[in-house]
Length: 516
Image (cartoon, rainbow, N blue to C red; front, side, top):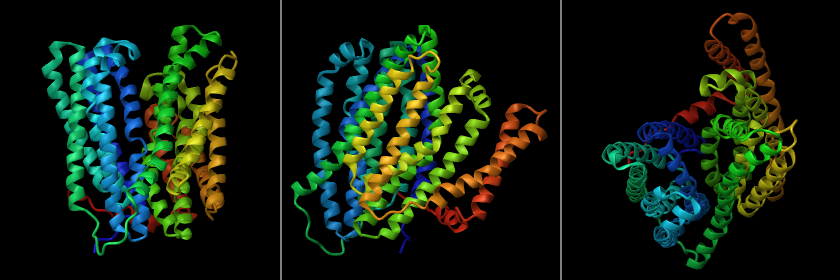
């Protein structure tokens, strides 16, 4: 009998897959930008926020909902209910996404002319509308695999999907390049739709081949009861996702406007906004590849333990995950605080953004904790609270943007202040909600004190190497060498203090690539 994959193994596999798909997506964007230029990318970027908003409204929270419900029923041994959940979810999401897709297609001219204000986006909107159906159905199957802790299957399929998308992009771009930007962007959307179709086919095949065994038929819940359980989870998560997407759009208008009030010219205000959103935040959130993967697998795993009343396992998963978030967060914070200018120069050719990176890095650990805590809350049925805290987070951010950014001496740092305050407040309320509903106790020594203690020698080693041993070498090599040495010391300290154990590392690395 094959050994069941742990949520940490699943997170590790998802991290590798996300890195590979991230690289493929990066190549995709580079090829597209070289093919259609800055103006074409501008048109493409007009379409993407709308595309993401529609996906969020149709399938946001669906995979999370399915994974949680599947894990809960699997914990009870009711596999019959699992299959009924999948069947109802496919019908519900299929009907809803088809209706939504038709509405988008028939109102594409309205979105292109009135919302995006560029007729060249019309063809792309028409083409991407059917993709919403495939994405919604795929989310159901992904939720199933996350729920039964076979994360490796959707991870491998995602890589295939991105590869096919890239191949079709090359073909369509070469074919449509002479027809203009509108058709090349349409070809890019066609590549995305093709990738989603392939993903759905592979997920369906994998589902048919990897269905959990039905040893004996148990009584299943009513269709209405299951539908209600799905919607209770999906609706708050979809609203949260939609609010975050709308907030991103609002930031684009609000931050530059408030910077103008602080006395900056329009080009400078846009430049500062571009540094923050286009350089600093992508760098700050890069370690989220690991944290996001961990959050994805933690939700069904926490739901499984919660449903079976295994508080010891739930407590361990919570503390293990928060410890990992602290370890990664501190490593990232040290890198961003010790090399802000070097990183901004090497990666973005913009050393002037160093102060933004330095001050944003202070919130890294808290931000990573927030993702883990919200994953736990989703796993134990606190989706409504997650939505409330998302709204609270945005309200604090908006207040800080409006109040602090117009002050000349504070300017853009008012946003960073709001980012820190909102994260701290929401983390506090997350901890309060979790400890109120469950007997989880945060191991402050392991989750906070030990990682901080272990990071101090890392900081000392990096500072020593920067100042004395490699001061005459190229700063790029200085940065890489000193950080690598410091990180090795950090890992040794973590192992020595028992913050992480060798056995845990071995267990995480012992996984198998699935046959689909």
